[in-house]
Amino acid sequence: MEPSALRSDPVKSPGSIAILGAGPAGLVLAIALARRGLSATVIERDIPPDIAPRFNPDRSYTIDISGHGLKALRHIDAVTEFDRRMFRFKGLKIPGRGTEEWTLPGWTGSRGDILRALSWVLGQYTDRVALEFETNVESVDPVSGSLTSRQRSGEANVRSFDLLVGADGAGSAVRSALQARIPGFSVTSKSFPNYCTMIELDNVGDRLDRHYLHGLSTRPFCVAGAIRGDDGQDSARWFCAIGTKDRIGFSGTGEARKFLQDRCPRVLEFAGDEQVEAFAGRTCYHIGRSLNCSQLHGGKAVLIGDAAAPYPPIGQGVNGAMESAMVLDQCIQDAGSSPDRLPRAAEKYTERWKPEADAVSWISERSLFENRFHTVRALATSMLGMSIFEQAKSAEVPYSQVRRRAERLWPLWAR
Picture 1: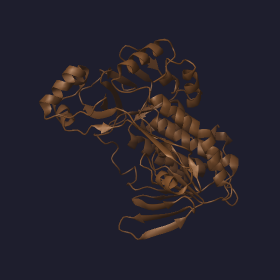
Picture 2: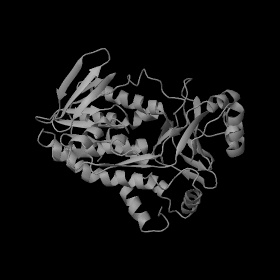
Picture 3: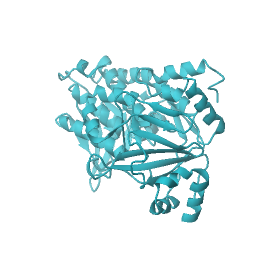
Picture 4: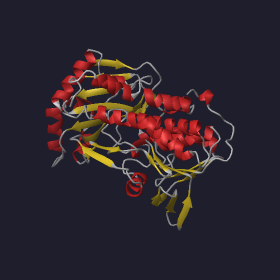
């Protein structure tokens, strides 16, 4: 739906909506609802994005926003703000695969950059959105729509809403409440051998183009990307995510340097001694988990973003999360926003978004780090124009359609 098609007139007798989580999905939904005259309460345990650190060196891999994220940002008219705050994304440079160009608008940056851009857009609707930062949600009841929250150093606050939106990430309290209270709601978990350790690249200079993500190695899978630095529009700060099939750890800097020299020497071209030392002590995170929900709603609650479907990263985490928020907004518009219609909107959202979330999870399971078969397959299908990872970036092709096309090529895309 184009932004011009959104209704700006207030809706009569709307139901009350709480959004639990002020990540990309939660903020996109709050903006989308406000643009149509609906109010929402956003509850977030962390501090506001404009005073929070822009990145975490332990986890700040560069995020690229492309097709599905672009569609969501156009839906809330946020493209100009992303142009102002982030680098334009022009594609991927991958060893052995050349360059995958991205010609539509797109951006790279940190999660903090994304939240700051969305927060600025949301600031235009302060009359419709109540923001409660540094507030913990202690309990959720999806049947009654009630929740108990507590601000730091404050008393517990018990309230009821007509719709609780779980935008509270992979460890979602709303999803746990749905599993506990809604008959038939189930969650299936999977674990894959995907691990990630970050290293900052402080000696890049002009040797890498900041408008691209750069593959520095395939085994381990190393991808470097830039975010805007703190010294003006043209300054850049580079991070490299090192993906391995096993958890890695080092006894000291020498061992870490040897690992890099043996396994991904190009990283050492761009990382100085201090960054190698920091890498030696950095946490290696397991990022190969996925959860599949039998449905994405129940009672007076609904799940978006990672709360609905966390999956191993393939460049679609934030993109898919923002699109899920857009889809829920469209379902509320279609079904109605009155208290009696919001549950129907949540049901329609499950019908529309669950096949997409399931498809991204399916795609992500076919891109495991240091899996030789997966690596060769990705290279071959890219050269033949049959890469599901490239297709998944398209704003015009639903994730579910990418999956259906791939399944017709069985056994090429079988496990």
